[in-house]
Length: 407
Image 1 (spheres, rainbow, N blue to C red):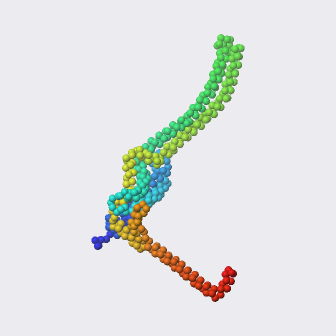
Image 2: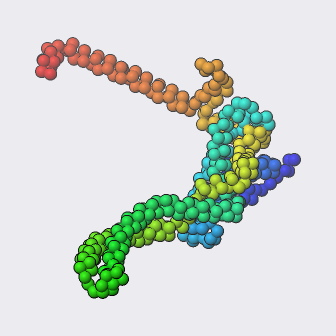
Image 3: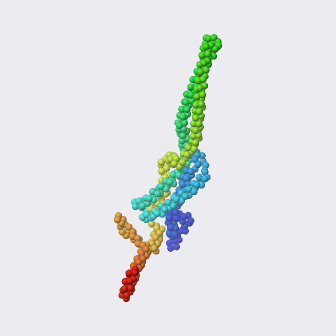
Protein backbone atom coordinates (compact mmCIF):
# COMPACT_ATOMS: atom_id res chain seq x y z
CA UNK A 1 0.00 0.00 0.00
CA UNK A 2 3.00 2.29 0.38
CA UNK A 3 3.30 2.34 -3.42
CA UNK A 4 -0.41 3.02 -3.95
CA UNK A 5 -0.99 5.80 -6.44
CA UNK A 6 -4.44 7.46 -6.48
CA UNK A 7 -6.36 7.19 -9.73
CA UNK A 8 -5.80 10.22 -11.93
CA UNK A 9 -9.20 11.83 -12.55
CA UNK A 10 -10.25 12.84 -16.04
CA UNK A 11 -11.93 16.03 -17.23
CA UNK A 12 -15.53 14.89 -16.75
CA UNK A 13 -14.83 13.44 -13.32
CA UNK A 14 -13.35 16.75 -12.19
CA UNK A 15 -16.35 18.53 -13.72
CA UNK A 16 -18.76 16.35 -11.73
CA UNK A 17 -16.73 16.94 -8.57
CA UNK A 18 -17.14 20.67 -9.00
CA UNK A 19 -20.85 20.21 -9.69
CA UNK A 20 -21.40 18.66 -6.26
CA UNK A 21 -19.08 21.13 -4.51
CA UNK A 22 -16.29 18.65 -3.74
CA UNK A 23 -12.69 19.83 -3.38
CA UNK A 24 -10.73 18.25 -6.23
CA UNK A 25 -7.38 18.91 -4.52
CA UNK A 26 -8.45 16.76 -1.54
CA UNK A 27 -10.29 14.15 -3.62
CA UNK A 28 -7.22 13.61 -5.80
CA UNK A 29 -5.47 12.16 -2.73
CA UNK A 30 -8.31 9.68 -2.02
CA UNK A 31 -9.02 6.21 -3.41
CA UNK A 32 -11.00 5.52 -6.56
CA UNK A 33 -14.23 4.72 -4.68
CA UNK A 34 -14.27 8.26 -3.30
CA UNK A 35 -13.75 9.57 -6.82
CA UNK A 36 -16.74 7.63 -8.14
CA UNK A 37 -18.98 8.51 -5.18
CA UNK A 38 -18.63 12.26 -5.60
CA UNK A 39 -18.62 12.02 -9.39
CA UNK A 40 -22.03 10.29 -9.18
CA UNK A 41 -23.36 13.04 -6.92
CA UNK A 42 -22.12 15.68 -9.34
CA UNK A 43 -23.50 13.73 -12.31
CA UNK A 44 -26.98 13.82 -10.79
CA UNK A 45 -26.71 17.59 -10.30
CA UNK A 46 -25.55 18.05 -13.92
CA UNK A 47 -28.31 15.75 -15.22
CA UNK A 48 -30.91 17.69 -13.25
CA UNK A 49 -29.65 20.94 -14.76
CA UNK A 50 -29.83 19.47 -18.28
CA UNK A 51 -33.35 18.14 -17.72
CA UNK A 52 -34.39 21.51 -16.33
CA UNK A 53 -32.96 23.25 -19.39
CA UNK A 54 -34.85 20.92 -21.76
CA UNK A 55 -38.08 21.28 -19.77
CA UNK A 56 -37.78 25.05 -19.51
CA UNK A 57 -37.02 25.44 -23.22
CA UNK A 58 -39.95 23.23 -24.21
CA UNK A 59 -42.30 25.07 -21.86
CA UNK A 60 -41.14 28.41 -23.30
CA UNK A 61 -41.72 27.20 -26.86
CA UNK A 62 -45.15 25.80 -25.99
CA UNK A 63 -46.19 29.11 -24.45
CA UNK A 64 -44.87 31.45 -27.16
CA UNK A 65 -45.12 29.38 -30.36
CA UNK A 66 -47.54 30.63 -33.05
CA UNK A 67 -50.97 29.24 -32.25
CA UNK A 68 -52.89 27.02 -34.65
CA UNK A 69 -54.37 23.58 -34.97
CA UNK A 70 -52.73 21.13 -32.58
CA UNK A 71 -52.03 18.60 -35.35
CA UNK A 72 -50.40 21.09 -37.72
CA UNK A 73 -46.77 20.22 -37.12
CA UNK A 74 -44.02 22.70 -37.81
CA UNK A 75 -41.33 24.61 -35.96
CA UNK A 76 -41.11 28.37 -35.72
CA UNK A 77 -37.38 29.08 -35.94
CA UNK A 78 -37.46 32.42 -34.11
CA UNK A 79 -39.39 30.99 -31.14
CA UNK A 80 -37.15 27.91 -31.16
CA UNK A 81 -33.99 30.06 -30.87
CA UNK A 82 -35.48 32.03 -27.98
CA UNK A 83 -36.56 28.76 -26.34
CA UNK A 84 -33.00 27.41 -26.57
CA UNK A 85 -31.61 30.59 -24.98
CA UNK A 86 -34.22 30.47 -22.21
CA UNK A 87 -33.57 26.75 -21.67
CA UNK A 88 -29.84 27.39 -21.20
CA UNK A 89 -30.54 30.19 -18.71
CA UNK A 90 -33.15 28.16 -16.82
CA UNK A 91 -30.97 25.06 -16.75
CA UNK A 92 -28.05 27.09 -15.39
CA UNK A 93 -30.26 28.55 -12.65
CA UNK A 94 -31.54 25.12 -11.56
CA UNK A 95 -28.00 23.69 -11.77
CA UNK A 96 -26.69 26.35 -9.39
CA UNK A 97 -29.62 25.92 -7.01
CA UNK A 98 -29.08 22.15 -6.94
CA UNK A 99 -25.36 22.63 -6.49
CA UNK A 100 -26.00 24.90 -3.51
CA UNK A 101 -28.51 22.44 -2.02
CA UNK A 102 -26.10 19.48 -2.31
CA UNK A 103 -23.06 21.44 -1.14
CA UNK A 104 -24.82 22.95 1.86
CA UNK A 105 -26.29 19.62 2.99
CA UNK A 106 -23.05 18.76 4.77
CA UNK A 107 -22.01 15.31 6.06
CA UNK A 108 -24.96 14.49 8.29
CA UNK A 109 -23.87 12.67 11.43
CA UNK A 110 -21.36 10.46 9.59
CA UNK A 111 -23.54 7.32 9.78
CA UNK A 112 -25.81 5.54 7.30
CA UNK A 113 -28.91 6.17 9.44
CA UNK A 114 -30.92 9.34 8.77
CA UNK A 115 -32.02 10.71 12.11
CA UNK A 116 -34.98 12.93 12.89
CA UNK A 117 -32.67 15.88 13.56
CA UNK A 118 -31.01 15.40 10.17
CA UNK A 119 -34.38 15.33 8.41
CA UNK A 120 -35.53 18.49 10.18
CA UNK A 121 -32.28 20.22 9.26
CA UNK A 122 -32.57 19.13 5.62
CA UNK A 123 -36.32 19.93 5.37
CA UNK A 124 -35.91 23.34 3.62
CA UNK A 125 -33.61 21.73 1.04
CA UNK A 126 -36.05 18.86 0.55
CA UNK A 127 -38.95 21.26 -0.04
CA UNK A 128 -36.89 23.24 -2.56
CA UNK A 129 -35.95 19.99 -4.30
CA UNK A 130 -39.60 18.89 -4.56
CA UNK A 131 -40.60 22.24 -6.07
CA UNK A 132 -37.79 22.05 -8.62
CA UNK A 133 -38.70 18.44 -9.48
CA UNK A 134 -42.33 19.38 -10.17
CA UNK A 135 -41.34 22.31 -12.42
CA UNK A 136 -39.10 19.96 -14.39
CA UNK A 137 -41.54 17.05 -14.63
CA UNK A 138 -44.61 18.87 -15.99
CA UNK A 139 -43.15 20.16 -19.31
CA UNK A 140 -41.44 16.81 -19.92
CA UNK A 141 -44.69 15.05 -19.07
CA UNK A 142 -46.64 16.89 -21.78
CA UNK A 143 -43.81 16.13 -24.24
CA UNK A 144 -44.02 12.41 -23.43
CA UNK A 145 -47.77 12.35 -24.17
CA UNK A 146 -47.65 14.88 -27.00
CA UNK A 147 -49.33 12.67 -29.65
CA UNK A 148 -52.25 11.80 -27.40
CA UNK A 149 -52.53 15.38 -26.18
CA UNK A 150 -52.61 16.73 -29.75
CA UNK A 151 -55.55 14.47 -30.68
CA UNK A 152 -57.48 15.41 -27.55
CA UNK A 153 -56.61 19.07 -28.01
CA UNK A 154 -58.01 19.11 -31.57
CA UNK A 155 -61.32 17.80 -30.20
CA UNK A 156 -61.30 20.48 -27.53
CA UNK A 157 -60.56 23.16 -30.15
CA UNK A 158 -63.40 21.95 -32.38
CA UNK A 159 -65.77 21.88 -29.43
CA UNK A 160 -64.69 25.38 -28.38
CA UNK A 161 -65.22 26.61 -31.96
CA UNK A 162 -68.69 25.03 -32.15
CA UNK A 163 -69.64 26.50 -28.78
CA UNK A 164 -68.41 29.90 -29.90
CA UNK A 165 -70.49 29.79 -33.11
CA UNK A 166 -73.56 28.58 -31.18
CA UNK A 167 -73.09 31.44 -28.76
CA UNK A 168 -72.93 33.87 -31.67
CA UNK A 169 -76.25 32.53 -32.95
CA UNK A 170 -77.88 33.18 -29.58
CA UNK A 171 -76.59 36.76 -29.75
CA UNK A 172 -77.26 37.70 -33.39
CA UNK A 173 -80.27 35.57 -34.42
CA UNK A 174 -82.77 37.25 -32.03
CA UNK A 175 -81.75 40.64 -33.43
CA UNK A 176 -82.29 39.43 -36.99
CA UNK A 177 -85.63 37.81 -36.10
CA UNK A 178 -86.85 41.03 -34.48
CA UNK A 179 -85.98 43.06 -37.58
CA UNK A 180 -87.66 40.49 -39.82
CA UNK A 181 -90.80 40.80 -37.72
CA UNK A 182 -90.86 44.55 -38.36
CA UNK A 183 -90.40 43.94 -42.10
CA UNK A 184 -93.32 41.50 -42.14
CA UNK A 185 -95.55 44.07 -40.45
CA UNK A 186 -94.64 46.74 -43.01
CA UNK A 187 -95.09 44.28 -45.90
CA UNK A 188 -98.46 43.22 -44.52
CA UNK A 189 -99.62 46.85 -44.51
CA UNK A 190 -98.55 47.26 -48.14
CA UNK A 191 -100.15 43.95 -49.18
CA UNK A 192 -103.37 44.97 -47.45
CA UNK A 193 -103.54 48.21 -49.43
CA UNK A 194 -102.48 46.38 -52.59
CA UNK A 195 -105.26 43.81 -52.20
CA UNK A 196 -107.84 46.54 -51.63
CA UNK A 197 -106.66 48.44 -54.72
CA UNK A 198 -106.66 45.26 -56.85
CA UNK A 199 -110.14 44.36 -55.60
CA UNK A 200 -111.56 47.78 -56.51
CA UNK A 201 -109.89 47.65 -59.93
CA UNK A 202 -111.53 44.32 -60.62
CA UNK A 203 -114.93 45.68 -59.49
CA UNK A 204 -114.55 48.65 -61.83
CA UNK A 205 -113.68 46.35 -64.77
CA UNK A 206 -116.62 44.06 -64.00
CA UNK A 207 -118.98 47.05 -63.71
CA UNK A 208 -117.93 48.59 -67.00
CA UNK A 209 -118.14 45.23 -68.84
CA UNK A 210 -121.65 44.54 -67.54
CA UNK A 211 -120.59 41.46 -65.60
CA UNK A 212 -122.45 42.68 -62.52
CA UNK A 213 -125.86 42.82 -64.30
CA UNK A 214 -125.62 46.43 -65.42
CA UNK A 215 -125.23 47.94 -68.84
CA UNK A 216 -121.84 47.93 -70.50
CA UNK A 217 -119.96 51.21 -70.03
CA UNK A 218 -119.07 53.56 -67.18
CA UNK A 219 -122.27 54.27 -65.33
CA UNK A 220 -122.81 56.04 -62.03
CA UNK A 221 -121.85 52.94 -60.05
CA UNK A 222 -118.69 52.48 -62.12
CA UNK A 223 -117.75 56.10 -61.50
CA UNK A 224 -118.22 55.64 -57.77
CA UNK A 225 -116.06 52.51 -57.88
CA UNK A 226 -113.42 54.38 -59.89
CA UNK A 227 -113.33 57.12 -57.24
CA UNK A 228 -112.80 54.53 -54.52
CA UNK A 229 -110.13 52.87 -56.67
CA UNK A 230 -108.32 56.17 -57.06
CA UNK A 231 -108.37 56.74 -53.31
CA UNK A 232 -107.11 53.17 -52.76
CA UNK A 233 -104.27 53.79 -55.21
CA UNK A 234 -103.31 56.99 -53.37
CA UNK A 235 -103.37 55.12 -50.07
CA UNK A 236 -101.25 52.34 -51.60
CA UNK A 237 -98.68 54.78 -52.93
CA UNK A 238 -98.59 56.56 -49.58
CA UNK A 239 -98.04 53.38 -47.57
CA UNK A 240 -95.39 52.23 -50.04
CA UNK A 241 -93.64 55.59 -49.82
CA UNK A 242 -93.67 55.24 -46.04
CA UNK A 243 -92.90 51.55 -45.55
CA UNK A 244 -90.56 50.70 -48.44
CA UNK A 245 -87.64 52.88 -47.15
CA UNK A 246 -88.12 51.32 -43.73
CA UNK A 247 -88.01 47.86 -45.29
CA UNK A 248 -84.91 48.66 -47.34
CA UNK A 249 -83.03 50.18 -44.37
CA UNK A 250 -83.99 47.22 -42.18
CA UNK A 251 -82.72 44.78 -44.80
CA UNK A 252 -79.47 46.76 -44.80
CA UNK A 253 -79.28 46.38 -41.01
CA UNK A 254 -79.84 42.64 -41.33
CA UNK A 255 -77.11 42.41 -43.96
CA UNK A 256 -74.70 44.31 -41.68
CA UNK A 257 -75.54 42.07 -38.72
CA UNK A 258 -75.06 38.93 -40.82
CA UNK A 259 -71.71 40.26 -42.05
CA UNK A 260 -70.68 41.00 -38.46
CA UNK A 261 -71.65 37.47 -37.44
CA UNK A 262 -69.70 36.07 -40.39
CA UNK A 263 -66.63 38.07 -39.37
CA UNK A 264 -66.95 36.74 -35.84
CA UNK A 265 -67.25 33.19 -37.16
CA UNK A 266 -64.09 33.72 -39.21
CA UNK A 267 -62.24 34.58 -35.97
CA UNK A 268 -63.41 31.37 -34.32
CA UNK A 269 -60.31 29.59 -35.70
CA UNK A 270 -58.04 31.97 -33.80
CA UNK A 271 -60.12 31.61 -30.65
CA UNK A 272 -59.97 27.81 -30.87
CA UNK A 273 -56.23 27.95 -31.59
CA UNK A 274 -55.73 30.00 -28.44
CA UNK A 275 -56.73 26.91 -26.50
CA UNK A 276 -53.31 25.42 -27.35
CA UNK A 277 -51.50 26.58 -24.20
CA UNK A 278 -49.26 25.07 -21.53
CA UNK A 279 -52.00 24.93 -18.89
CA UNK A 280 -54.46 23.18 -21.22
CA UNK A 281 -51.83 20.64 -22.23
CA UNK A 282 -50.97 19.88 -18.60
CA UNK A 283 -54.67 19.41 -17.83
CA UNK A 284 -55.11 17.06 -20.79
CA UNK A 285 -51.95 15.16 -19.84
CA UNK A 286 -53.46 14.48 -16.41
CA UNK A 287 -56.73 13.35 -18.00
CA UNK A 288 -55.01 11.10 -20.55
CA UNK A 289 -52.33 9.57 -18.35
CA UNK A 290 -54.41 9.32 -15.20
CA UNK A 291 -53.41 10.17 -11.68
CA UNK A 292 -51.13 7.17 -11.13
CA UNK A 293 -48.94 7.58 -14.22
CA UNK A 294 -48.74 11.33 -13.65
CA UNK A 295 -47.82 10.75 -10.01
CA UNK A 296 -45.22 8.16 -11.01
CA UNK A 297 -43.50 10.55 -13.43
CA UNK A 298 -43.51 13.34 -10.86
CA UNK A 299 -42.14 11.04 -8.14
CA UNK A 300 -39.44 9.87 -10.54
CA UNK A 301 -38.13 13.42 -10.93
CA UNK A 302 -38.56 14.05 -7.21
CA UNK A 303 -36.40 10.98 -6.54
CA UNK A 304 -33.73 12.19 -8.97
CA UNK A 305 -33.77 15.65 -7.39
CA UNK A 306 -33.65 14.46 -3.77
CA UNK A 307 -31.22 11.57 -4.23
CA UNK A 308 -28.05 13.67 -3.65
CA UNK A 309 -29.52 15.16 -0.47
CA UNK A 310 -30.45 11.82 1.08
CA UNK A 311 -27.24 10.17 -0.10
CA UNK A 312 -25.17 12.84 1.62
CA UNK A 313 -27.17 12.33 4.81
CA UNK A 314 -26.57 8.56 4.55
CA UNK A 315 -22.86 8.67 3.76
CA UNK A 316 -20.52 7.41 6.43
CA UNK A 317 -17.36 9.39 7.13
CA UNK A 318 -14.74 8.54 4.52
CA UNK A 319 -11.11 9.51 3.84
CA UNK A 320 -12.31 12.58 1.97
CA UNK A 321 -14.25 13.78 5.02
CA UNK A 322 -11.31 13.22 7.36
CA UNK A 323 -8.91 14.95 4.96
CA UNK A 324 -11.36 17.81 4.53
CA UNK A 325 -11.79 18.16 8.30
CA UNK A 326 -8.02 18.05 8.74
CA UNK A 327 -7.54 20.72 6.10
CA UNK A 328 -10.15 22.92 7.80
CA UNK A 329 -8.38 22.46 11.15
CA UNK A 330 -5.07 23.40 9.54
CA UNK A 331 -6.64 26.56 8.14
CA UNK A 332 -8.05 27.39 11.57
CA UNK A 333 -4.67 26.72 13.17
CA UNK A 334 -2.83 28.92 10.67
CA UNK A 335 -5.34 31.70 11.19
CA UNK A 336 -5.30 31.31 14.99
CA UNK A 337 -8.89 30.04 15.35
CA UNK A 338 -9.65 27.63 18.18
CA UNK A 339 -13.00 25.83 18.41
CA UNK A 340 -14.00 24.22 21.71
CA UNK A 341 -16.88 21.91 20.84
CA UNK A 342 -19.75 21.66 23.31
CA UNK A 343 -18.08 24.14 25.61
CA UNK A 344 -21.22 25.60 27.19
CA UNK A 345 -25.01 25.38 27.20
CA UNK A 346 -27.23 28.20 26.00
CA UNK A 347 -30.47 29.33 27.65
CA UNK A 348 -32.36 26.50 25.98
CA UNK A 349 -29.90 23.92 27.31
CA UNK A 350 -28.34 23.25 23.92
CA UNK A 351 -24.61 22.60 23.71
CA UNK A 352 -22.79 25.41 21.93
CA UNK A 353 -19.25 25.71 20.63
CA UNK A 354 -16.85 28.32 21.89
CA UNK A 355 -14.81 29.94 19.13
CA UNK A 356 -11.60 31.70 20.14
CA UNK A 357 -9.95 33.98 17.57
CA UNK A 358 -6.38 34.10 18.86
CA UNK A 359 -4.98 36.40 16.18
CA UNK A 360 -7.82 38.84 16.65
CA UNK A 361 -7.42 38.70 20.41
CA UNK A 362 -3.69 39.27 20.05
CA UNK A 363 -4.29 42.36 17.97
CA UNK A 364 -6.91 43.53 20.44
CA UNK A 365 -4.48 42.98 23.35
CA UNK A 366 -1.74 44.88 21.51
CA UNK A 367 -4.10 47.77 20.82
CA UNK A 368 -5.24 47.82 24.46
CA UNK A 369 -1.64 47.90 25.74
CA UNK A 370 -0.68 50.54 23.21
CA UNK A 371 -3.61 52.69 24.28
CA UNK A 372 -2.69 52.23 27.94
CA UNK A 373 0.92 53.20 27.19
CA UNK A 374 -0.30 56.34 25.40
CA UNK A 375 -2.38 57.22 28.43
CA UNK A 376 0.61 56.72 30.75
CA UNK A 377 2.88 58.84 28.54
CA UNK A 378 0.25 61.55 28.34
CA UNK A 379 -0.04 61.63 32.13
CA UNK A 380 3.75 61.74 32.43
CA UNK A 381 3.96 64.65 29.96
CA UNK A 382 1.34 66.59 31.88
CA UNK A 383 3.19 66.00 35.16
CA UNK A 384 6.46 67.23 33.63
CA UNK A 385 4.73 70.27 32.23
CA UNK A 386 3.23 71.03 35.62
CA UNK A 387 6.64 70.79 37.26
CA UNK A 388 8.12 73.14 34.67
CA UNK A 389 5.35 75.64 35.20
CA UNK A 390 5.78 75.49 38.99
CA UNK A 391 9.46 76.34 38.60
CA UNK A 392 8.50 79.41 36.55
CA UNK A 393 5.99 80.48 39.19
CA UNK A 394 8.53 80.05 41.97
CA UNK A 395 11.03 82.25 40.13
CA UNK A 396 8.59 85.06 39.35
CA UNK A 397 4.96 84.64 40.43
CA UNK A 398 3.91 88.13 39.32
CA UNK A 399 4.77 87.42 35.68
CA UNK A 400 2.57 84.33 35.82
CA UNK A 401 -0.28 86.38 37.33
CA UNK A 402 0.01 88.98 34.55
CA UNK A 403 0.03 86.24 31.91
CA UNK A 404 -3.16 84.70 33.32
CA UNK A 405 -4.91 88.12 33.37
CA UNK A 406 -4.00 88.81 29.73
CA UNK A 407 -5.40 85.48 28.62
